Length: 167
Image (cartoon, rainbow, N blue to C red):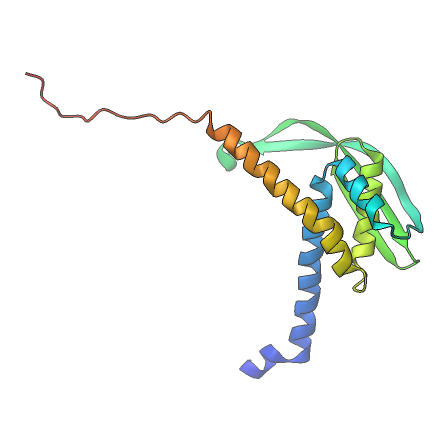
């Protein structure tokens, strides 16, 4: 294979879906982790037309959580967690999906609606600036606050120097 095939239109067209998938994965993660009230507030401030049709109404179910000791041990069941999902279509063509931890039906619907709207290249910049970036900033601040709180409980263990002769 020559180097010229790497820059061919086919190669670049395959890179575009990967980028789109990565961008979508990112905004869906931000929407799923958002506080429901904060998401509602940002949505109301948008004044965006919300004409959509539900494909799968918001519904809550349970998912089985599994873990591994040390990250590589034998898997075991930890427990169950409620998850709410929703799928909808906007303007008859853009399908939005959302899965959110918890039982908040409105959160799942708003996340799915924003997922569908963010797929429109014309709307995306405004929505990223007005919704996703403020949510991302707030979530980063919460993570920093949790780390600081956890850091206050940190214990440092010191070892004595061995080999000292007592006289």
